[in-house]
Image 1: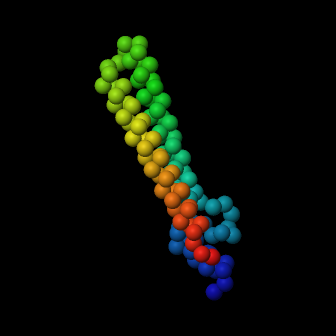
Image 2 (image 1 turned 90 degrees about the horizontal axis):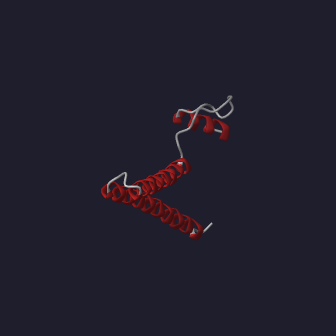
Image 3 (image 1 turned 135 degrees about the vertical axis):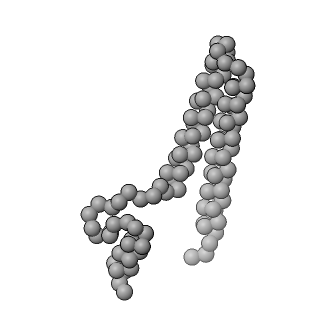
Length: 99
């Protein structure tokens, strides 16, 4: 079995188009898409917390809403930092592997 045949069989098993046939089908989201989503959610949570703080300063919202928004932003940021730390750890482990 040559490499192209193996690649076609693998592509067929994964449900994607053949590597030599026209445009590829949309692939499932990868790790980079997931990471970008986490970072985007952390940014949105931070903006929501800032909005709540500004609204509280103007007397338009309760302190409970501000604290909830800040806690959500903090949890999102901690998640992103934890994922980043795991990615760095995995990269360092890969770099230590013998060739």
